[in-house]
Picture 1 (cartoon, rainbow, N blue to C red):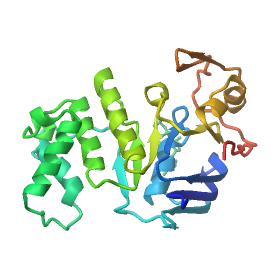
Picture 2 (tube, rainbow, N blue to C red):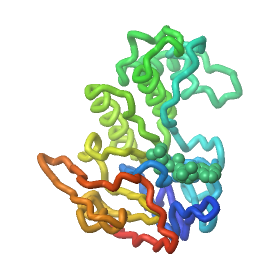
Picture 3 (cartoon, protein in one colour):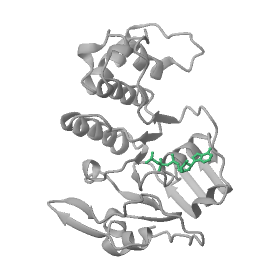
Picture 4 (cartoon, rainbow, N blue to C red):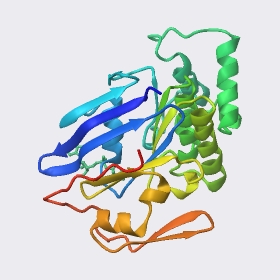
Length: 271
Ligand SMILES: Nc1ncnc2c1ncn2[C@@H]1O[C@H](COP(=O)(O)OP(=O)(O)OP(=O)(O)O)[C@@H](O)[C@H]1O
């Protein structure tokens, strides 16, 4: 199987600050890949590398067997939530429509098929009721559901999601995670899902990249989300408890980001 995402010997540093070093990783079609870690550990930076917006300090990154490039049509992207300005006049359905034909230099594809697809996507994220409302008048969660619909519109081969469940209520968290999982397993996309909280997607996740303190671990949730592995990553005793199919991490250090001046390279497991 040709991987959709491939990193070899990848490192990212800002000045003396090491986010990760020596990362070798392949993400395959149909894989739901979660990126976890505390604030400032480099989760968003990891997505930026895949989007071609952040150069690696060293190593190589490829998407679909080719060097990454900005604006790739292979990629769907749900950015970390920022609200639209209150006076944004674009309507909900226009935003979703941009995901379908927005790449055609402003020439909208007319026709029933586009409208049908927009209606279908709005329905999938439960946004049909506010299809014609200007974006600026919608709540944070309502706007977020539209970003999900927009990113899914082009049925991307690689779907990059930066905390897509933030500000969604439980019902919509479940609906949106199921939708992203559908894109992954039914359409065979690779999903890279950045999150602070693995539980809402625990049933879907195939593998995890856990970033902390300039180190990382890669593997299945069973391999990575353990007392031993997380205690080592945080350089402090952390207890991982499993109950009713959920994972609870107890005793995370107060300072969410640790600096390891002598940062060791994390070992890649689970390949
Ligand atoms: N262009 C840049 N120049 C210098 N430092 C940067 C740059 N981009 C990111 N950083 C730093 O790298 C670290 C990782 O940032 P990033 O946004 O990737 O973290 P994150 O894991 O997504 O955090 P959060 O959970 O808070 O969203 C941060 O400390 C950030 O300040």
